[in-house]
Amino acid sequence: MGNTIIDTICSVQHVSDCRVIEENGEITQIFVEADMASMNQDDPTQQIKSMVRSIVGALALNHDLDLDYRKIKVIEYKPDAPESEPEADLYPRIQIVAAYQRRIPEPEIVVELLCRGRTCLGVARRTADLGKDTLVACVKALEQIGCGKMEPLYIQELKNEFNSERVVLVKLQYDHPSGSRHSLMGVAEIKEDYLLAIVKAVLSAVNRRLVVAYPA
Image 1 (cartoon, rainbow, N blue to C red):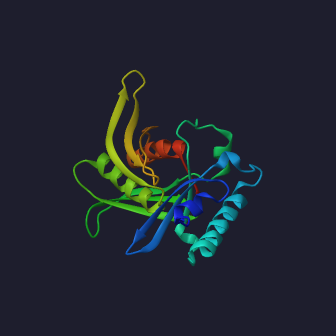
Image 2: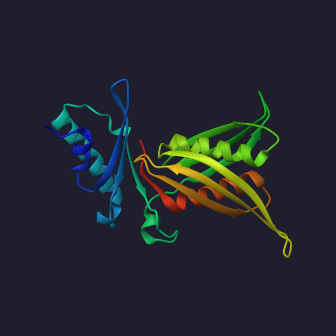
C-alpha cells in the first residue's frame, strides 16, 4: 500500500506531526507541527520555508497534488516552555492592534490582532458583560490566525486592597490542530483600559505556549 498524504508530509525533515483538513474531498488546510529544536537556530525562518517547499514538492511527486503553499501552516506547540526561553524570541508573537467598542450599526466589541504582518479581526455583540464580550471577540480574532480552536472558559477580575492593584485573569481551552486539548491561563494588570488588559491577559496565555511560525 502506498503512503498516505499524512505519511508523506511526516517524512519531510523537521516535521513531527500533521493534520490535514478536507472539505468536499479537497484539501483546505494542512497544519504541520515542526520540530524547531532540530533546526539550525541561526536561520530557522529559511528552514521553515524550505520545509514548506519540500512538503509541496513531496505531495506533487507522490500524490500528484498541486497544492498552494499558503494552505500549509507550520506551528510549534511548547507545552513546558518558559516564557523567557531564548528561541521563543526568534519568531514574532501575536500582537495587539486595538480593542474598542463600536456602537454603529449595533453595539459591538472589536479586537484586532497582528501576526506575521496579517491583521485578524474579532467581533462580539455587546451585552451587559463587557469582560466576557471582549474575551469572546479576542478568541474570534485568534481563530482567524488558523492555529487551532480556542474556547473561553472564564474571566475574573481580582483586586489587591492593599495597593489598589487590579488584575484580570482569563482561562481558555485550546484544541491543537493535531487533536490534543490544553488549558491556557493568562493574567494582566488593569491600568487605564479594561479591554486592552483582557486582550493582554489572553495573549500572555497564548504567546507563552504557541508560536505561529509560518502562517498561510
